[in-house]
Length: 302
Ligand code: GFB
Image 1 (tube, rainbow, N blue to C red):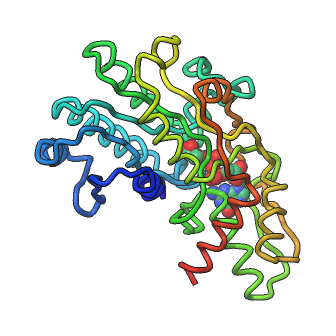
Image 2 (image 1 turned 120 degrees about the vertical axis):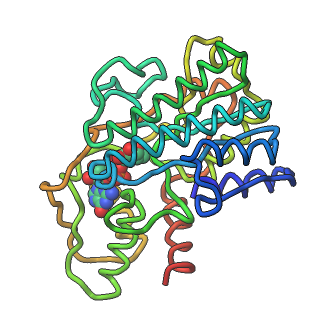
């Protein structure tokens, strides 16, 4: 989802020499393969969007995969980019790097100030390692490697598998299937009380192009921070989100919460003051983004 959106954004900004690959063609967990690919392709700029990702359940259950795969991908790509002489690298992390009880909205400085949310601790630790790799290559070698921390993302090409997906694709699919089957109720995990911030993936992709063109490592590390938050500055409860998706999809039955499923972080709203002062703002609001994502689901999954 993220990689495709970045390709769309780069193409519409006029970049024509894009080098892409898929996990089927190149296993970034393998150091030798990764180094060979970078030596052959010799990219000027590297955008590291590859990752093992998933929603709360996948993170909680596939703990070894989320830690191992992401550590290996990050270490191999960042080292290979450095060795092959890439002029700039942008690493994408996740807002789950912050402590579970971080003060809201969460400033960049909250990193490593408290205990992590247990449902995604392995993933968060891998992403924190990625941030520190970028900063360490900058401090030791002067590499122009920067880290961006997006909030929860959604949009076209999301994963709609009910066990491993994030909440938005899960809700779109559940409400759509319930409406099609004339079912009376839909189950939503947890209490409905957690608060989440959501960013449409094309907005994230535009932010990546913005940082590629306008913000270098000196500007970030020079402020005493290790990364920059990427969000929209607003959050919503899962209960309200479920009602919004139900309305867009046209499901009129009952929404039932299942508190035996995990809530995860109580709240995860990013402080986007730094992002704003660097000159970037999102453009797609949640209602519009949900409609676009549902349209994409209808056109591609039915
Ligand atoms: O999107 P989600 O899986 O990610 O869940 P997290 C967000 C909230 O939605 C949680 C609730 O409180 C879920 O319990 N939820 C309700 C559901 N119904 C559903 C459903 O059908 N499916 C899903 N998936 N959730 C992930 C992290 O946390 O966020 C990752 O595990 C990553 O590490 C990602 O950072 C962005 O926000 O809880």
